[in-house]
Image (tube, rainbow, N blue to C red):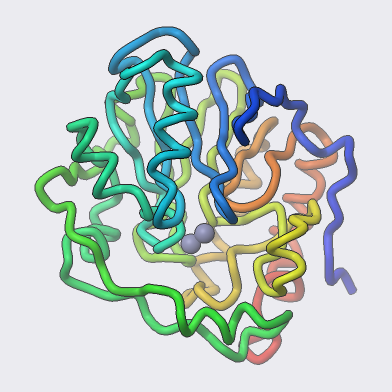
Length: 278
Ligand SMILES: [Zn+2]
Ligand SMILES: [Zn+2]
């Protein structure tokens, strides 16, 4: 029985360390590890004001590190064209209110994620029986109540396009949250997967700190719909991506990554779903 899918060094995406926690994994894709979560910068460096896009906004308190990274990559006082949210969990929207106001940008998200971003609905409580370590219990302390950025919210268009980034498309990948989306670029098979699957465990404090490279389903304690979550991973694996940047863990790439992703999709119940729900 498969219980854990280790990612070898060969399956880790080659990256250029740009300093300050910022890493480049493609000429126009960089990510910042802001505490436990990744924030992604899409766009070529030095293109200037309104020529790039930010995906997710980290945990609360990340504003300074994100703006610093943005300035380092795109030039001082360079603002993005938009912010795109893969979903609205607290560790992905921490600096959203502050950054969207400062940059005066629209926030793109899936309409099914709107309730968590317009002040109308809280996420369900964590599954404290999810197992794997202390995090499912600690998750009781994590914020679940919605923020309200309704004046800037824009729905991703139904045709799958991403207006601020014409070479990318979005895919509905629910399960972890109802309106979770992933971003896909066919030309080089790059995938921004959010928390649809992740490349490190989020269940034990050790895993969270060390970020051992492993292929995992979405964070267990905060995933209420495992049937949809499994279907979403299958959908993403079927795209056969070459590069994946996930919400947690190091970006992965190549044949080793793809084999691991397919293994996860094929054995989703055993690997990803908490034992008490299988
Ligand atoms: Zn999440
Ligand atoms: Zn997350």
